[in-house]
Each structure stands twice: as C-alpha cells, then as structure tokens.
Image (cartoon, rainbow, N blue to C red):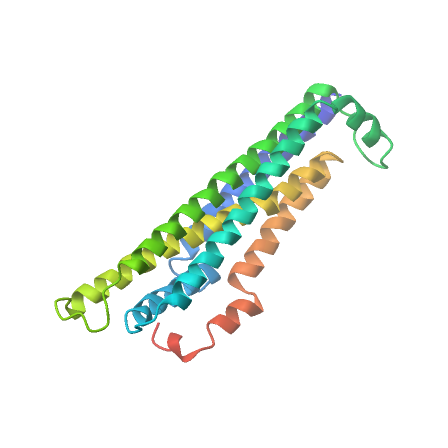
Length: 235
C-alpha cells in the first residue's frame, strides 16, 4: 500500500509539472517562435484592420457569434461533466468494485479514489472558468465591432483607426487564449482518467499529452498552412 501511495504521489507531481510546465513554456516560446497562438494573433490584427474598411460588418459579428457559441458549448459540457463527477462520488464503492476487475488496474482505498475524483473535478472547474471568460471577451469584441468607426467618418484619424484595430485585436487574442487554455485542460483531464487505472499509466499519458500539444502548437501541418500566406513574408 505504501509503495502504491508513493507512485500516486510521483504521478501527481509529474502531472502538475507537465500541465504548468508546458503552459509556462508555450507562453514563453510564443514570444520568439512561430506557433498557432501567435499566428492567429496576427490574423486577428489583420481582421480588425480590414473590418474598418468594410461598411457591412454583419459577417464579422457572425464570426464572433460563432466563436462565442463554441465557448458556450464547452462551458455547458464542463458543467455536465462536473455534475457527473459529483454524482460518481456518491457511488465510489461501486466504482472501486468495477475497476477491481480491470486488468492491471491498481487497487486503491476510498480516500484515494475521492482524491482522484477531486482532481478531475478541479480540472473541469478550471476549464469552465476559462471557457466562460472566453465567452465574455468575445462578447466584448462584439461590442467593439458595434462601436467601430465608420468607413467615411471624417473625424477619426488613421492613427485612431489603427489604435482601435489593435485594441479590438488584443481583446480577441485574449479570448482566443482563454479558449485555448480551456481546451488544453480537456486534454489533461484525459490524463487524469488514466490515474484511475494505474499511476504509471497516468505518468505516461501526462507526458504524451504534452508531446501532442507541443506538436500541434509548434510543428503541425496546420501551423505550416497558416503561415504559408504572403501576409507573413515580413513578420
């Protein structure tokens, strides 16, 4: 039992280091290395500059609405998952009996199972707050688009238009970052599920999640496609 507890502790520490460590690395690397995050930031800046040149901005508000609905979907999904986890806590004994029949599954007492459920709950609470914050910031973007200077508005200087575009793009970028962090938590929630089987599997999946996230963010074909346009020749 003591050996199992030691492995659980090691696995938990590696999980936290993987999640927080990758988040720290991704944020730092995005400042100097091409990735999906900073690439989309540039696209959003160009989007807001072009928005100011259009008289009809219905398509822009439609895009913002779709992005906001994506956040709402994941936020509501997180709530449903949290409700399921809280319900499962009331059936811990049955869950333990079920997993005892799983090959290679480690046998834990009730307290350890509740700790695992608690960690899973924390992950989805974090995801819920990130998705709802992304929703609010996309709502801010909709307000900014509604207040954007008109194409033929004479009192607005080019410098003021550029400042507005940068401000709107900044809010949109923050919303995208919050949505990305919410999605990232779903990936790490899958790693926590592996902990119910075995702590070593928990370690393996945690590391695998970091590798998958790194590949998709910094070296995926999607990133190469996004940066293949002429818009990035001088950036």
